[in-house]
Length: 137
Image (cartoon, rainbow, N blue to C red; front, top):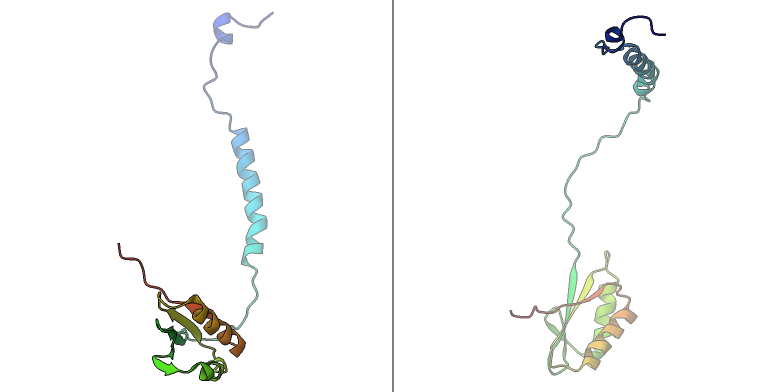
């Protein structure tokens, strides 16, 4: 019960339907109309002016060396066992507190290095590190 010939029914529709395209464009237009006033609303603030200067603040270090005989050297100056605690306590009171770098000879007994660490901790030094040499390859 078709109205028309078979050739008229089988013809392909070669026109673009513009209605969905117009609908999408209208929705986008409404979204932009709503969001543009929100994006332009801002609060005026007077920000402080500051200069950006590079501060070269290297933390100071204190070097504690233990030689092969077990003698202590604080910044390359020999220190007796009795005077080590007092010397480290004066270093711990500096502001900012320096880092303590312990260099122990590989032939020294570990006990001497452990004693130095204990004295440094009791003196109030918080940053303690070890200095080693890399293995030759």
